[in-house]
Image 1 (spheres, rainbow, N blue to C red):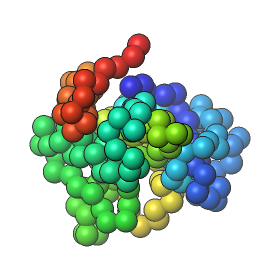
Image 2: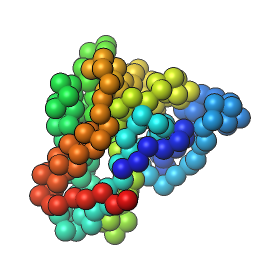
Image 3: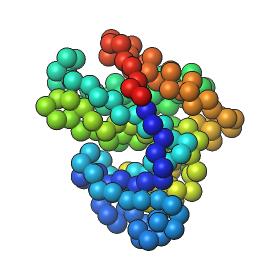
Amino acid sequence: MVEHPHVYTLGKSGKIDHLLVSEEALAAKGATFYKINRGGDITYHGPGQLVVYPILDLESFFKDIHKYLRLLEEAVIRTLKEHGIESMRSPGETGVWLDVGTPFARKICAMGVRASRWVTMHGLALNIDPDMGYFDLMIPCGIKDKSVTSMRLETRKPVNTQLVKEQLIRHISDLFEADIFVAD
């Protein structure tokens, strides 16, 4: 579990034109850009966003990457509920969303994973209290008609990042029926 410096990453299935500014413009804002080997399109990582990289041998649980994604989504949904935020899945769109099926639909958690020999890498990015202006420099996850939000925006109060980490670890542990720990 980390908070990255300002960085944009483009997954294998992403489109470079979803980055709306040049790399020089990103550098002027203190951000970098990388093409990486996870699934998904373009995403932003930065301070105020909890990025989680679960490393699990799925052979010990199940061999189903879609089930893995749904369980990670469920862990986030349960964590958000503890903060009074009602969230859900959006059919055909990986991640965790609010107000699905309305003109106000918005993403609060992006996901992009990869597995090699059923060992997972990459993961999820939960917006706790990032500078939301950085999302304006891209088409988040390649989805043009929906916005992005954060726990801070939704609750209208400061959110304890350490508490969110503890809750998320607990929910992942419960859902995978395993003791999950965070490496330093």
